Image (tube, rainbow, N blue to C red; front, side, top):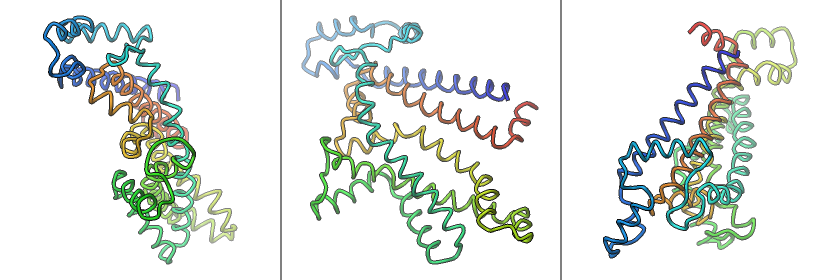
Length: 309
């Protein structure tokens, strides 16, 4: 198991390094922060001074080496826009984003998995078809379309809920629903497929033929074996929580890190964008690493394959 974990850790480290390098290069090749932050009418002397102040005149590999050295001392740079430490700006926004992402994740797991399991246990029934239809509706619509539909119905037409901003818990209802509907559909679909596959296995039919209580067959034999692919999907969702907040926070003017990322990219605030991308990549890689380890723990055949390689 230790070699299995070490191989996954090495792969995760390389992935984060590649993401950092790619983001660093793209940000510097996609526009001049001095021109964007100082405006088109800024004098050339001010632009030159700005570029000199932030080291933008150095070759890109010199800038990258300085960036890597600063990361080793946990220095994530300073915002070019308001001169505050980039890490501080990001940490200040994380609680606001978690106010949406944690309830959304709870809704995805709490509704999606039970709905999929129920549909599998009542296959070809009206409830099964209803779950499939709603699941397809949920995961095929992009989150920005779902958000706009919810605003149109509950804010514009009915006037029940605010269409944006952050103040009370009511402001979080529509963004949370927007973030969770697609995930509920995906989890319902995967849970149903996983349960149907397990319920068709010979050992399930054998247990039923021996007179084992059906409830025990489901809880002790079917659900644990169906949990392996479901864990993978849940892990991916946990990893993509922050990345998924970008669109929703922009639609609902929610002041979290997703909105901070959009504003920072438009202003070419390099240190803040790099810090946010590192956070998003690190979260996704950590979630996938956890899923890989859980997967290896749940299915010993994967550990054997890893050891063979």
